Length: 290
Image (cartoon, rainbow, N blue to C red; front, side):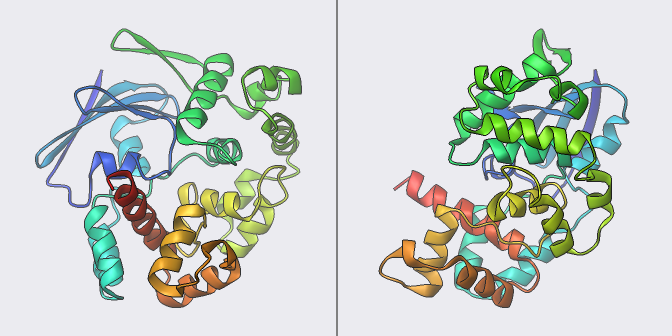
């Protein structure tokens, strides 16, 4: 059993991090802890006042290094919040709701498949599909008497037929997952090359070649796997909050995505991705508790 304790960490709240729509492998226990799978590790995270305690089973990597990288612990999120808070009161209020959000540095391959699955889907169903996919094609890791599964490798998932994927409940996404897996396996889209690129637009162009990856999914991957903070993924919640706060169109469905992108680019000072997370979490939590 590995253990790592984080003392006096600002901008770290388990619920804010895991319930803001950026990841699907984490589940909350009855005691408020979260358990999830990162690469080949099963991690339990517990928050106790000023301390964050990580315990887990970890294969093939240094536990502390894995935690620090995945949770982006060497980035000062207070600077992001200070910069965004100065924009207007709307941003200031949204940050109060999600002050503990951090952008997780997720594996690019896993993030691609996860967000293809997320298209026209809800979070509980996305999680169940990914769990079935992992249990079928991933590796088993035992932790505290329970079985967990790593996300399948490209090679392992490439063994699945369209019919195999359909049997896991993927619906119309089965062919997209199948085709994208083959493209990545055959290096038609090279993930190592994408990781090395510095220009966000070039990264996006490569991702958009993949079956099932449209502009919104591409922007989610850019933000949640590649930490490109200049992107602004737009879903129904983000469109709604941006319209309510800044555009004021009587029919939010008529708000143009290009208009939203341009507004975010002009307004959020290169931190559109962070602004999107605060606004998304704020609006969804307000409606959840209305």
